[in-house]
Image 1 (cartoon, rainbow, N blue to C red):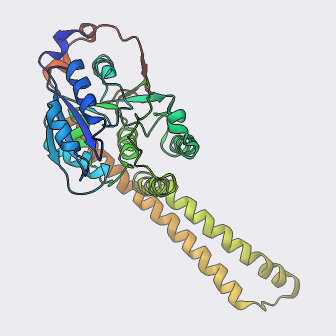
Image 2 (image 1 turned 30 degrees about the horizontal axis):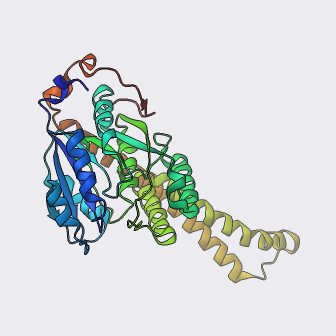
Length: 335
């Protein structure tokens, strides 16, 4: 990486950790070797195995976050730390610190606000087929709902600009935070890139904190909530269509009887079908109104994002950063 582009930039490495004493030391040391001028911050999320001590011994700045959950940790990190470029990774050793330089280079050359290190070999992690299947399904669902900007929305290895970090209204409490980051970028049409990186297995003695069904349910719920907030017309139209189909199902035999005999013998069924149709119309109307509100909120977020100044070093000509050999630009257009 050309030093002229990074000498005047403050780079912060953010490592949220929960019971990662077996791996956090080498991870911190790896980032210190790769980015010697960067500040390395470890936020300990109520670990009971000496994670904080190992991080301090390795030379990291350690802070404790008492609210349990990765989302709470990331929200605290983004609020506390001031930098020009942020790199976030897990403390479990599955992401190579040596790849951080490539993430920063891609962020600079692409003038992106977020670079996602997509995981090569993620489906082989510890042989957990439930996680592999869920990863494929959720990524497919994301592309169907929010657009094709990302191919690995659950990657925890990312680089951000200050404008992204300070405009990101994090609300998630757990592992859903990566999904929320991706939706934020897609919603505001921010410039993003993806970079395919190797994904390692956890070393002996380190265990995944993910639960296939519990965390999968949380992520699915987050998908629904984010769709309601960012695409209310599609969200409420789908529910409206469900009620309309139910109404027509109840209504059809009653209408058939009426046209045949001129009588309505199943009045409760007719009343129910009419009520369901009215609910369908109300839901559709709510979707139309809330869609306008969501557009206004997105415009306000965009204005706030544009109001955040970029460091002068990031405004230099792209040629100063040198070539990028492994960058794969995302599909979101530069704003």
